[in-house]
Image (cartoon, rainbow, N blue to C red):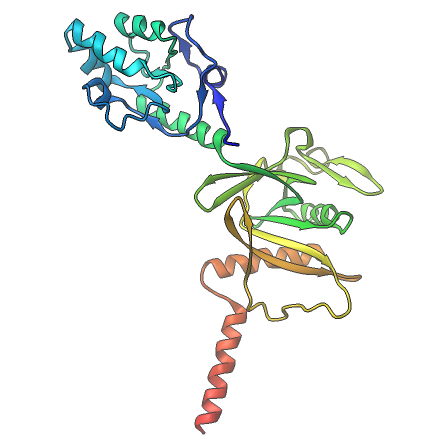
Amino acid sequence: MPKTIRTKQLLEEFPLVLQNPNADVEREITVGDINRPGLALAGFLVYHPAERIQLLGRTELAFFNSMQETDQRSRAEALCQFEQTPCLVVSREQTVPDILIEIASMYKLPILRGRVSTTKLAGQLQRYLDLQLAPETMMHGVLVDIYGIGILITGSSSIGKSETALELVKRGHRLVADDAVEIRKTEEDIVVGEAPELLRNLLEIRGLGIINVMTLFGAGAIRTRKQIELVIRLEMWQEGTEIDRLGLDEQTTKILDTDIPCITLPVMPGRNLAVLVEVAAMNHRLKRIGYNAAKDLSEKLLHMIEEQENH
């Protein structure tokens, strides 16, 4: 089901003032895009995106004020008539024309007025809407920031995810979320994870219980949210399990219809998982800038074989 927020949440999150108190602030905002309705005020309503927030800057209001009163009334009615329009937002603390307030109030369309410039206000609203309306899911795992790479560690319960995260924090890396990770798709091919508010900064270690990472290790040991760039799946090693020893087969996993590189690490006694995860992060950085050790070795071997065949 698509996510929605309500116009009243903009009043709670931003320093905006409602200009017509009788308006319906329960109107739903369903899309993250913002529209500047210059064409609508000019009378061209073909393809008008009525479901978007309508942002009126200095240009739009100057144009509206330049019209005759009859034109102002007809254009205001054309703009405010849509039930799916969540609100009109006016920037720079400009004076809202009385006719616009009158018509908007008739249709119970909220008019919100902000202090900042149109460009800044549009950017602030866009970032907020992108975050609030982004597709999201919840995954069981641990999200850590290692050398700037967001790594989601997954695996069955009690396999050692939280203990690995604790060791990584001790080695100077940062915890984002433990046990439950809220994941949002903020942009195309970009997914961002964070901890649910109730579990923020907390780690559950069997035998120790719940520990607060920020209290124990300081503010530098935690991070609020992080883009997920690599998934490491922990699996118990069993005799006969096939393991890619060279790393030539690059696997991916889908999170919110986004392909994320994925590595499977077998868990067995004596393996230092924290070090392996740390090295996986560094190796991922190298691959991102164009160097792949496995492919480089494969190419060298093929080159040696070709040389021997030629001789």
